Image (cartoon, rainbow, N blue to C red):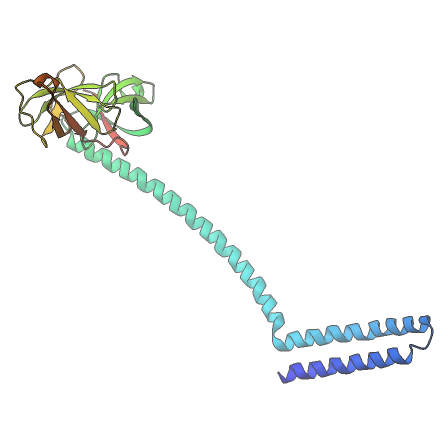
Length: 271
């Protein structure tokens, strides 16, 4: 604080001297005034610069600017490091997802060990009101053929409708054009489960025998009839039984075991 006062006093004294000189020479001609101004600029400006430097030095302002530059450099390094960490995190998530898919495929292969299967991962899907199909990343090069049954951990997915060398298109049982011959697991009543346009996870079970005794909550599995699906694959659960005006109009709503909107990994049964 005392240093600031001393610097201020010196500046005031210098300023007063300059003003006195200007007043003294004001009565002289403009050439003299110009000379005085030039002299004042030559003398005063370096003095003021020196005083400013001295003041900044005393107050530590020069180290402040040095610290600012240092902080900028450190900030750039931190930004670079953060960018590298974000990239590493993205790569970790990719590897994690790949490992999770491989784990799911291994679990599926163990669960359905009695079948010869080829694992696949869904690479695109068309889950709209009318069409419910998915495409997987294996095809004829992997032994995949049309009409092969496709399953997931939860149960039946659908069957292969077309193949390329490295992809296969699957029509799911939820597709409105699909019809699956099924049995009620407990009562063994037969039915035909068709996809609906209302919901992706609901099938409509029709052609139920007039003397059937199907019950809500019972599970539904493939009957093995129709030449496509193997017998005994889990399809879903009876959520509602609707009685018609007569027995022939009765139907049931089946909730599929597979969530087709979240489905990622499947097995194609090749035998």
